[in-house]
Image (tube, rainbow, N blue to C red; front, side, top):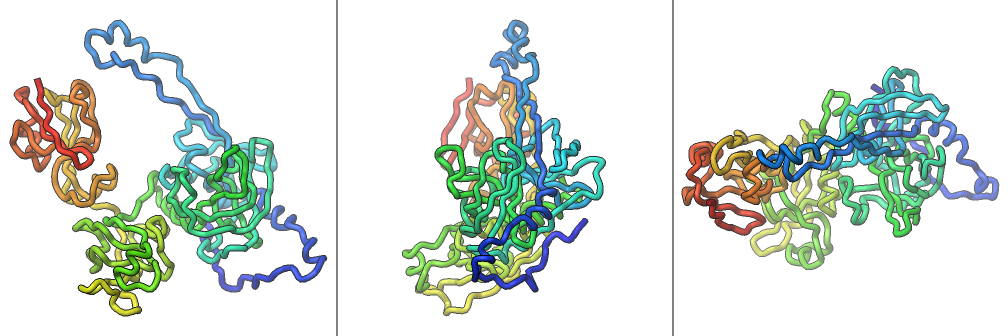
Length: 459
């Protein structure tokens, strides 16, 4: 596998054009070396069948069961991708080909190949694929995306609107952008004014050395076309996903912070004795959080991770994702004293070991097969379950609903609900649930949903 990140040492000094001949310089040499590594991706997805509301009814299913047996429906999508190794490692957006049953990759020289997904992550909107039966392909190397600066020249290469491979130029307009209300990705993007349109998704954003700075993923627009505000996933995060795909992982290992942070405001900064807002303040922390194990606590202000500033929650998440599990990061933080003033101007340092959310205590999932609760699948609450289901960090024990099937649907429970008691007897583990919920004599359930408690009466 090729080197993932090109070093920034020795890069040519940045300078503005000084003469008319320099203004007339062309991007053609960069395009010639990079465009062959940008591909078109054609993906086909099978859409889920519409489920009959009578499917689980023992009587009506014999009359209406045929409603579930329609012809399969398919959806086609078009996007772009970038080759990152000579043997056909390709990165794109998850929304381009995630969940596809058939993926076809077309190179700029019109060669076509089948591809298979190695690793996909809808949350980061990244997909790593491998072209089958390919070798000696053109590919791009990754830049160090932390070394780019606002104002650097970049080229966007992709297949907008399906018209064919297109190159547009611009500059880096911003760093550490949230991407607006796009609902996709980590919330940490490189912003560019290089025109990006539908079909550019998954394409390359390259620098003047022909290295991949990021993968174009989205735009802000009211008309559907480019308004000069496009977003790309940084190359340093892509490098981490390539490493995990090379290890044979099909889903990413995400570092678990075990805490909730809030962006610093002027009022918060004044309260802790800072002269200006900087960093993020820890508002909640799980007892098993790696930050807590490293000595941090609620109220601390995290200002840097590995020497890079973190001024928003998304920046902290990005730094942890890019570092990856099994590593240690150096966290710089301020700790307010008892009077609320920060302890001097020099931040404290802590080494935080990154790991996935632990399965402690074991989730011990149980599916109830008989009785009034038949069809409920529940599990013990632990950090992994909290992370998967986006539960409050304060929960360190209890039982949560994982899924609701069959007869249990009539209870109108939903995943994420907490079961706190059965027939008035407290439930604190799945073992309690096996003992109390497997029979038919369940008359009441105490539940908690979104912080609100209720009692369900069963008949």
